[in-house]
Image 1 (cartoon, rainbow, N blue to C red):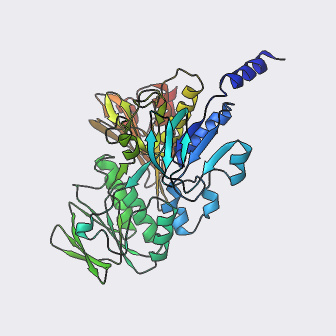
Image 2: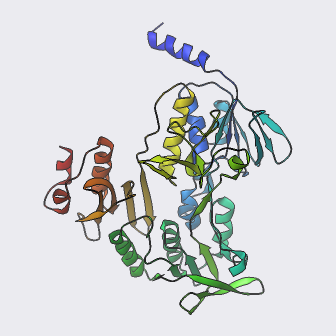
Image 3: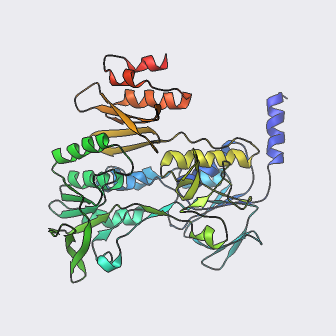
Length: 420
């Protein structure tokens, strides 16, 4: 028998341990289970999902799924038979009510309990809704997190109807693009000075604003929502902070998310706008891990949450490696994307703390990239219909190399020269 095969067999024997229970059935939960099986870890795994659907991709819900361009079964990470074939027990419609750390059990809302040796919390985040006091409970007011939300909204999104979007982040802008494509009359309001104020540079915001304007979407910045106006329990208009009134048949809130950390907090696990984890994705209880949108970790001295598919997958896979004996900390290499109309915005790195940007024209009309620097160090890039800039910037970040500003700013210089 080859040495590698002997090692693999010993590895499997050493890691047949007690049950891993995963709370949550989204991207991070599935990635953790799949990676463990990929690493030939044979411990019993149980996934507890609150929804009645198999784990599925969420980003397409408000895009291709809402547009009717993608059937729901194409959103599933794997078909049902995958779970049986990989000895992964999946329990749907099984929300967890209590984590009992002393007994090492979780109690479900139906009163049943399940013992664990290792617990993983991958509960994600929930979109913030508009307060009931200003009309958030009116019919026709939505947030979008799961399939049921998307299905309800799809019935509403009819040509000629008037949609008000509250919030000018990526979620709000993506919703505007989809609604515009479906023929709705779209107004987006943002209370801050500009759209994308928390997540992108002014140059990126300017480019995205112009794209939406070219499609007929009305964007009103420095404009907040005072209250929604209803008629027979249904939203019909909105009173805005500048004193104007906007008619609205539908309202979508895109005002950020709250991490689902309440279950952990009630169990006495340390939280701080999310579940605090160390570099190895462990919580304050060493038998419990957390990953994905609900997890808070250290990034260059700052405590952050990364709300992205990439982070959910990479952090979960890092946790799987730790669970099977690796001693490698999670080192995030962030990347994101946003599809709006025929525009692909690709982002590599994390622009936290940037103090300077460099704008580089792209290879064709309407394409460009925005390069972020902090104290002269290249830290992130936004690429708008410019795949070459994105790929180059991402590779530079992975290699730990700088991108000289003079080179980036000169369109006559090939970006690939930075990788020489």
